[in-house]
Image 1 (spheres, rainbow, N blue to C red):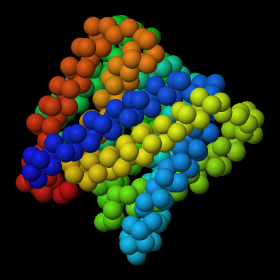
Image 2: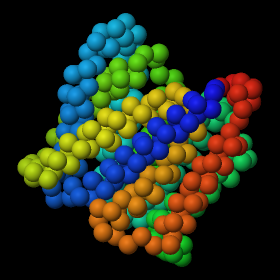
Image 3: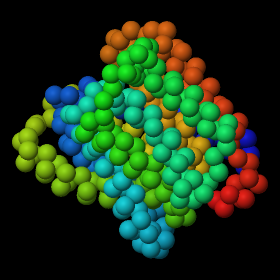
Length: 306
């Protein structure tokens, strides 16, 4: 694999994590403007409407392969697009933002461990150290620079929801490496349709419990931006990145999400940028670099059976 391919994947992943960090800001801004499941349902409905404008030709061309993997793609869309977001929003009702921020950092660990357990993908010692360093950066962000605050954490139902969500997204990330050989846009379109279909009964449950909330004009704007950036652009870029460098290496970049979210909180929510934010950013970027330097080489990967 050429260095140009590596750098292309890195660029795609950085932009992807920026989009998902931005999604965190929009999720906070959406409170009282549009309900969680409305946001999930409308974003995937919007994605479907957009991609079908220019993906129909690709879908027709790829259909002979796509129809053989409809179950696989439906499961992937359900796990990675609908259930992850549903559990993420549901956790907010039961646990603190501090807990959510910390536990989201477990995603790369889930990816590496599940890759090892299922596909026997080798994890080097240097990669392990890199993941630990990035997680330390995430902990500093989540604890507001005071690691003593971590002593006050307790596991509750919301924490379990976040851990389950991270596990599901790790499975989705790993599953992408086994995706059918079709265009990323075709694959994404089918998974998006599955995600939207599954979101409908979940929205019905929300309405039955809380009633229907009419989105405000601001809520509609948030849904539109979330549809274009975190849902459409970021997901396609992530699929392409996993195809280029694999789920384990791509998963490490997910630790950039809380860092970007913190930076944008300063820009859009007028929060104060403090020393621990800068220190965390250095740790996360350093940990990612270390994990990349310590990745198994092509020959080592072949020996590990991947």
